[in-house]
Image (cartoon, rainbow, N blue to C red; front, side):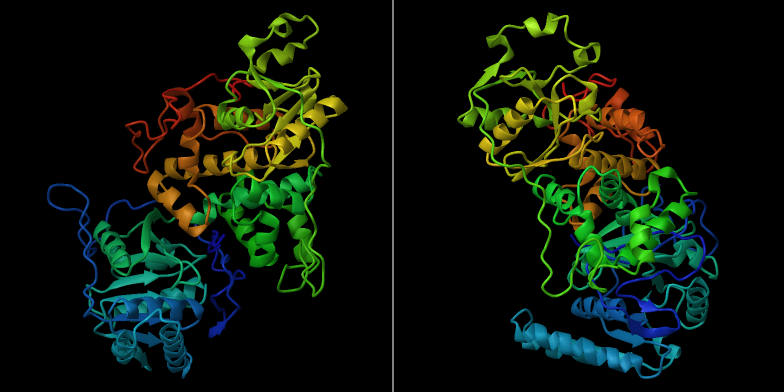
Length: 612
């Protein structure tokens, strides 16, 4: 998983970063890792355009067509740390003359030498032809004075995360470059709108947020501030695409897309650990081997740095007026307070010192498979399990093949009546996909977790309760082991691990669309490319029964009424209309939120509809 971490902070206070230049030293950088950087400020999307801004639309009222920057026109990169060098290398490879500038004497020349060395390594590895290198290197120059940037068509700034410094820089550049020069910031922690507020022509100012390492990662978030002209954003998108990157358009809201939507991936794992549901190694393993994610939240934040990840989360929380949706983790804060920051200090959630053994995830001992299972209903989001069982050595019986006397058995507890889609085991116990309720609310029930692909999954989590008999648990373990899965038995948690995490990611993604951060397609593209998720959250939503996410989160919210899990407006709309909303505020059409399995409208609502 490789994402550039950002968040939002209403002040210009510096926040720890990775792969960025640090305050007070424009050229010094911290070691780069795949996943980290901090914040941004909440400001509304573009309204009326100021005088002097670029045209906002064509004469017929349609959105403007973007025009990529002519490769013959120079690009200036100001700030020559890790990100600045990476961006310069991209522009150089696209055929532009590139001018490097840094206020620290000699730093630009050092950066040019470093870029040349990287290009030489590409040639040595056969990834660039010698002729391409020989054509590119003469186009790279180090500028010693801002006046040398006069003829450029685009300036991209990658200096320290300090609002005053950035504003002063761009004010000075406006006196040098032509009025048609596009100005862009690669900020990861400040408001694009706030930086542009100091400019004479704020309409030509955009955010171009590259992900680290910039030459390798395809995603670029193109951020429109409040005053950004539509034509400027369109031209920036076209230019980034011409450079071989994948641009996504988004509004200037905290965390942009990736680091806003990604918050639950960390938060839910930490919360489950704090509630003693499972240990970090088990949670990581379940999210990898069942959820399809490249890394779990504990190993990933050890890689990012606990201080950086915690600062990102806290700044997004503060920028969202301390919304419970974004509440930071107390256990992570304790790690930071103790100086246990992950790989860079040798210890975080895990021990990374030389020779330290990696903790093993919890795995159930071998158990005999059940003599048969009876399927009552289609298992909803876990329907693929029925195919796997039918292909296994465990006989699968359908509800119509057996007596239905259980449904009229007066011994059933009243709340059991809501569970209609489940597997009945020979001992009378039941196995059901989590719906956000707890196993302990029922007689002899085991919940199992969601999987990205039940056929490909190598691990499945089970959640029994004290009310679950030993026989039922052993039969449940044996069934999944017969299907070739490792089984991790965890505590009885509302929503379990994968299901709760995925449902929250979907809720955050839908909320981002509703609030105008980005379109559905942009959100899904950003999360796949920027966070390396197996599927965009909204695409994942379309694979699930229409009411599944809303029902699960409503059930979790009932049991954990902190405000964190209450499903958002977008999910409520989808539940009752089957439609989401575009970033422009209009309803989607054509079943964008429709289910790929044939669900065309909302299913049952209520606390027991998720498994139907």
